[in-house]
Image 1 (tube, rainbow, N blue to C red):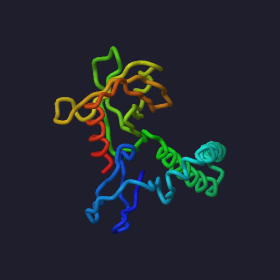
Image 2 (image 1 turned 120 degrees about the vertical axis):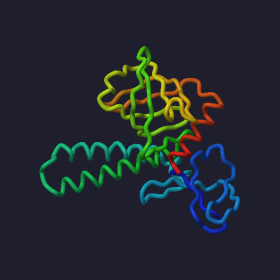
Image 3 (image 1 turned 90 degrees about the vertical axis):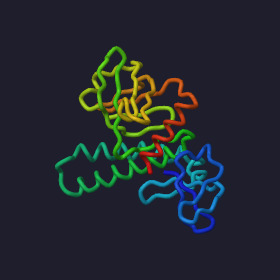
Image 4 (image 1 turned 30 degrees about the horizontal axis):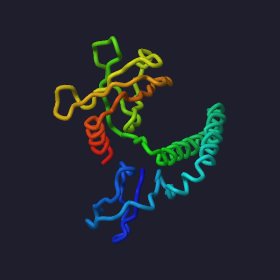
Length: 208
């Protein structure tokens, strides 16, 4: 999550699409504030975006080491409470670190806590339902459950946002870039200005 501090009331203001915003209004005091000194936050962590970007290679290396450590600890599942607590804590740290690093992207990904979409694989007329894991203006990661085995690398896929036939429904075509268990990563094709606006509105609706 990206934030700036209000210069008037010192409250934190969220920035869903920071790269296109020069100023924003503080929801607490209604003051218009300039968007500068952006911070990236995740859990209890808060780091200046510029500082994080300058040292991103260090944090990426830390992420790899932390993920390896979690993997090693999980191999010892059942070895006792210390391993269970350590596994949960390190997994939480890895999740927070990934979110911090995502905040350095020009096209950040956003985790949606309770959102689902309908999708159709090319050549299949029926729509299937999947949970949204994270989303950006260029792609989406969905949890398709057991239906993930329908996907193949580079296969075309259409994602329907909101229920087809309802107000606000729109759809985007994309290609399956990767599959990991039940997760499918999709890169959108040719997102025009209108598509981008609807996608932004959708993300704002689901993250506020």
